[in-house]
Image (cartoon, rainbow, N blue to C red; front, side, top):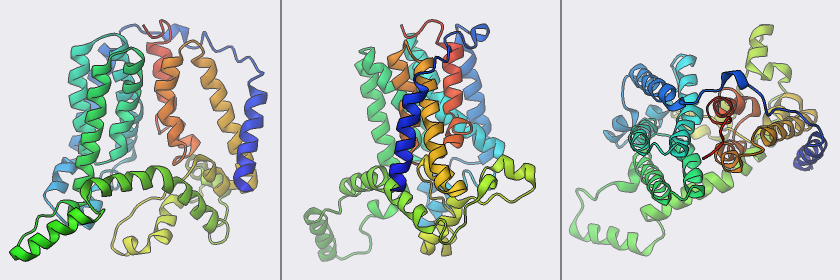
Length: 361
């Protein structure tokens, strides 16, 4: 019933808002820039270097040097933990806005040499940060644009890169998948080989199962968990659920995604692993205001969809390429986070400044 309430609010709000003419075609006319790649690529490269220097290491390479799963989880968590918020913000804007947009810009302008160089650099950056979703975030817009422009070699190369990086990071994050048989008798080695052949626990199967669970099952599971604990064990946060407002009012902001991680995964928490259990966008408003939050979330999301429709009215390819992934991420991110620190708003801003005056060629 609660989910139905949200979707009803979303549908009705979208239908009503669609009747309004927002007249956004001439938005930011005075800020339009033609040669965006000349500006964006040096900025992105410098920011990548700054971020990696601040981290002080290449996390993925550090993880390769250990076979301790808990230690690998800590290495991955430390990429964002214990660092100034400005560096985490730089990382999110790079991964979710500047990098994918610059690749789309290069593809639309047929800058193939710069595109190839950028693919190598950005792939390494995504690999270094050990988040499998990052490589997909970067490449999905480019793959969509390449298919529509019939540049199938770019789409194929990008898709293979995504698969390779995800496969490699899965092996790094789960060293038990690739452990060699050492100090075993010949009979024991043969038994292990036969077991791998005769069971479904092969590396490829486990990777495929893990991705399937993460993409298809976990979003719904996390929504259920949040409903289970809120407000039964955790009260509605009210306006203090928004970090900036909590700071202005002098109240403590409780990050339920971290608090719930300890409740849902107590074994990992006891081992010193600090994680988050992000959930669908509407659940954050529910955690703040209950049922009213679900209605509010439906209205806000409908409003954003209508604005996007108006801004990309004449560019179906770029509307799909630049907005598909953020919309998919709504299954595990708050609307406000996704728009601002999550890079969706920044992506749209880049489109208005660097592409909209000419559209896709």
